Amino acid sequence: MRRAILKSVAALAVSAVFGASAFAANPVEISFYYPVAVGGAVTKTIDSMVADFEKANPDIKVKAVYAGTYQESIVKALTAFKSGTPPTLAVLLSTDLFTLIDENAIVPIDGLANDKPWIDGFYKGFMENSQTGGKTWGVPFQRSTIVMYYNKNLFKEAGLNPDKAPATWTDMVEAAKKLTKRDASGNVSQWGVKIPSTGFGYWMFQAMTASNDTILMNSAGTKTYFDKPGAVQALQHWVDLAAKDKVMPSGTIEWGTTPKDFLEQKAAMVWTTTGNLTNIRSNASFPFGVAMLPGNKHPGSPTGGGNFYVFNKTSPEQQKAAMKFIRFATEPARAAQWSIATGYVAPRQDAWDTPEMKKYLQEVPAADVAREQMKYGVAELSTHDNQRVTKALNDNLQAALSGTKTPEAALKDAQRESDRILRSYGR
Image (cartoon, rainbow, N blue to C red; front, side):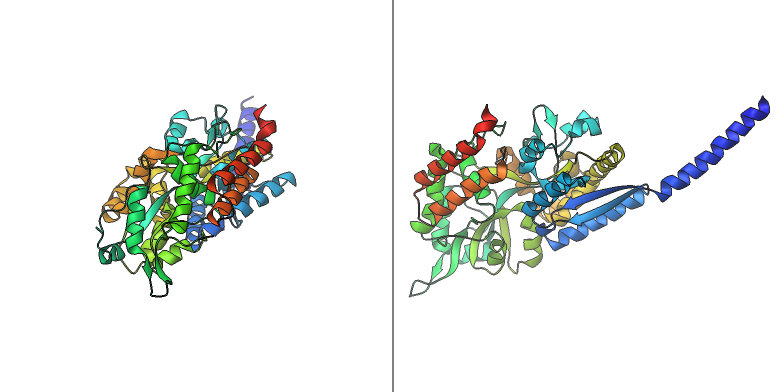
């Protein structure tokens, strides 16, 4: 009997050794889709994070797939999912939430994390685009708000206080008039302000409506309120900046070139994501300020950026590994490093409490503007069939900005199209 027990123990020991070797030789592989178009330097930061994770977790292999813009990334992720080879993990827009749920493409985070205090540690404003129906579907990661960057030298030249940014719509118009430079023929060499209207026009518009006490959709993603009086007033203000006040170019202003125009001093003030902070800090040849967006009734900005999502039709082992990577990426010190490296808003308070972040804020107080603005943040526009609804709004915003429709007519048309798209979801 004793000999049989010893043989059994020996067999188990051998099995354990070979099992461990097999486990190390065959790590769990997960694919990670990431929107590379947010910037080359960010790619290096992600590569470094993946390498650090694999070093700490030799039983997991992460294949990072840089999938293009956010729009290209969700198309590629859903195409892969429908073909039976989904990514395990992806960073996609927080506003893709309802689309991913409707496609049954993602799994709830709650069951994987099984850690309510950890989930509750993310800023509430960011969780508005991460939770629905009593479940958590996304984990905030690459999140942002819109802020205003302004050129302090140009403010000083125009007789404006370089340490005080415009706080209201009226203040911004008055400052922009002083900052716009024209020659004798009326040609503009420097615009007072530029607010981009391509790509994320709806996002800029939502900043104006948020500060005007107007919310553009319900939390269930089944209804929009594009043609409310506060929205029409906000769009009229945007149109007037070019058509009436002459402080901004008319027509289309490109999202991608707005930071470049600021760096080249072709625009004294620009609205863009806080995610551009590191880029502007690295490349500005002049002192600049970062401020909350000028508002009407109060400050306001939608949140923005990307969430981690874990995909359906992946193995339990892969989902567990993906969750481990998410926890790794959002640890306080690492989230602080990520925010410092990119300019995105660290999505949890414990990241802001780290020594690294406290030191950074002493050196770069501007980095705290986005977090302060979160007090006035609203959920970014997100509905079922979100891309079509957003396109309906963007197309009509462009029509108003180009002068082919009045703001009221443009928003009525956007609302009519949105109602048609969402009709089946509201039942």
